[in-house]
Image (tube, rainbow, N blue to C red; front, side, top):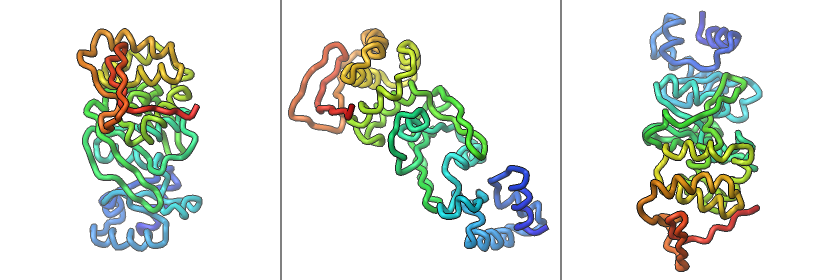
Length: 260
């Protein structure tokens, strides 16, 4: 059986990813011969390689992308690499109906920094979180399986903690009411210990700013118990106007203007 036949058989069985070594062994050819065959199929747009030695089968409807959509191969790739991960930030917010525009890149949280992926027109960026395996997720089905996405509550903390990768604090504040509209305030406080305390201080202030008082109240007691020092709202911003919010032990050094 040729590698082309093997790939067709994999697709017929619902398999849309494979490794070079896997098809070489199944076809009874060397790795060099398998790579040569896969290069030819890649030029035809039949397969794509988002990672060295890892390939995806590209059906006709995605040939213009030059790859499968990210959520249809990232879970399989991360499983191949043995890495914990979840869809995060703006990509997660979109799954929960809180992002009004498609993020330019698919955002994935992993345990350690790693380079992003470019596969045709598909871009994947990775962000690092030490306790990635403990962050609560919810599973969404895709045409090629499923993808794990941070819960709305966990996404809210990530958006605050990684706001520079989420369009800034203005955009984060805009998303929060939509993201948390169907969640219980106590469920937000329950995941607070998974993140640095300053994230709770900043998130509580932003929730109060956008009128999500119930959710802000749920964090207020946690902040009162655990926040030892005052922190700035925007660590990378040197604002000329500084306001102190004793309730959150927060130094407001940036004016946040959500689009509500």
